[in-house]
Length: 176
Image (cartoon, rainbow, N blue to C red; front, side, top):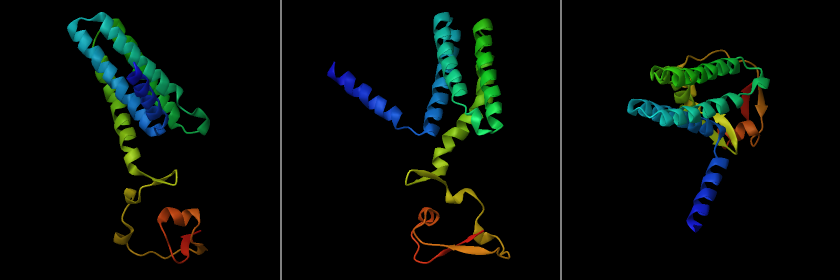
């Protein structure tokens, strides 16, 4: 009896401290898990199990769709919404004709997004609560030929731009 409240409290803290990226990864994983549960239920002839798995997957797809921020002006949010609408429609078709091909279609449409979201937190570095792009995300500057430099201005040590790069004992030149 007492152990359950501690577990619930731990789970609540775990969810509340997740990064948004990790939360999305977990939603995708849950959706795929429920779809696979529905696939097994179809194979076993368990209509109630299939319906339960599909409804849980639908709830997650709906939550992913609700989490989209259309106010940011990015066109990809419309593309994501279309993919989520497709996935939801596939779950409806799954309930109608009981054909697991609809689960495969959802995996094909959303699997690459899941993989991208899963890789995203690993490609980020957190510095004082702010996310900074990983240093190895572009070509190696040492391997490129030297180019003519653009005018620069000095940035004092201790400014946010310098803190993200690490401790520096002299001014850092930044292209303007």
